[in-house]
Image (tube, rainbow, N blue to C red; front, side):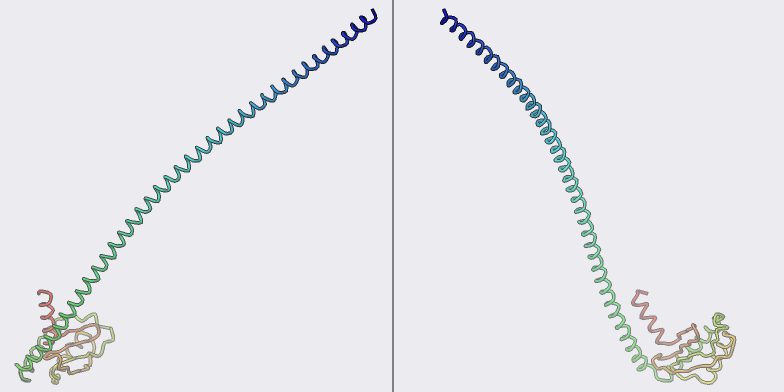
Length: 242
């Protein structure tokens, strides 16, 4: 009897211990399960947040990439326009340089032509002087000189030299192919003095290069009545198609 009681008590204690241990295990499992569920929830939230951040990062990256591509396209377009402008400027400068060189060449050609023609004129004048010297003797040249002198005096008598009045012009330079005789000298002084308004003296220079005739220079007034001047004027008219 005693043995049976002892067995029952031990059995009851064992069952009680099993119940307590089971309850503890169940409680522990529940807590652990709850903790794992909470951790899973937190992990899910973190994963969602991380995914959202990744999406936002990708979105920002795509936006930046798009802006960068737009900027690159704009830079390419701007560079293309600048290159086109630079090309046009270079072409323009090249045309200007070409035109300048052409104009320079034309001017050089024209200058050379003028120099050649000028040299021919001088040569023709020299030849004309020789021809005149061969054809006309001193008496003939004196007659031509007297005729030119008369022509110059008549022209001067009709000229208005009022601009020289009060300009303190008292001396006149006269170049002649032949020396003035006293009557010619006095007549020239009289004409000039009347035109200027005061007595004028003459500075006379004999220049055989005039061939025949006279050059009068007083102040800013000048009249060239020489055969050389007529030859030169005729040569210029011929040069210019006159």
